[in-house]
Image (cartoon, rainbow, N blue to C red; front, side, top):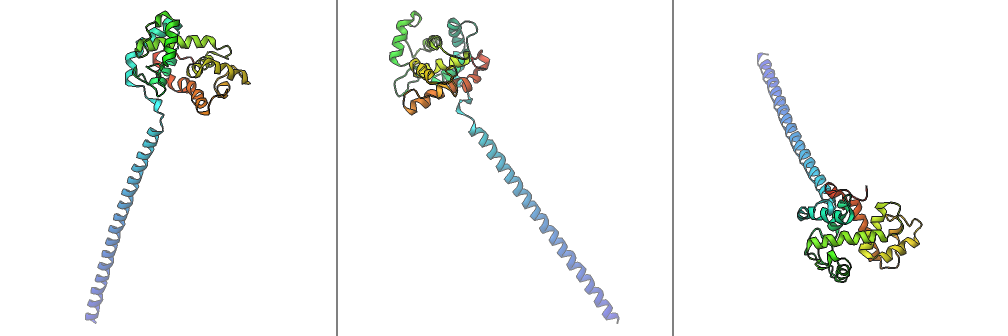
Length: 241
């Protein structure tokens, strides 16, 4: 009987040891699984964060950055704009226009031959140089001349817009004329149910030009006044709120 009892004790001890070892192995395996799951979760979370940041960055429009060269022409623009438009000149609007035209590159040249920071066609540069003594030297590649010509031409077009609900819409029509001609602006307005509104109304009407030209012309004032202008808010007032 003593031998049987001793055997049973040894057997019970072995069973306890085996169960303890199994439990230990189970716990260790569970810990490893949890650590792997935690690492996988953190890795996935990190990847998702990086993708989210990349999506935000890539979704920003290209216009969200002011070119580095813009700052050197800030005082010139303010001086020339105020000389033509007065102390309340919409400097931010003009800056947005130059941003759209050339990104402040005085050597810019378009495929169709427009030149300089204000992207004047040679014929337009010659015409405006003969019209205004302050532009007589006809130098579209000269930044000061280009800025002076832009604000001067905008002022003329602004006065040639005969219908506008407010100055914002009038300036938008003037920009449309800068891009495509005042005649097309008048024709659009003659066909519009709201001739004094550019955005979404008169400027959205194709007066008889190619679809590509219409798309470009409709987008031109919108980009300048509703996107680029705000980039230069600290330069001076804008014509649109």
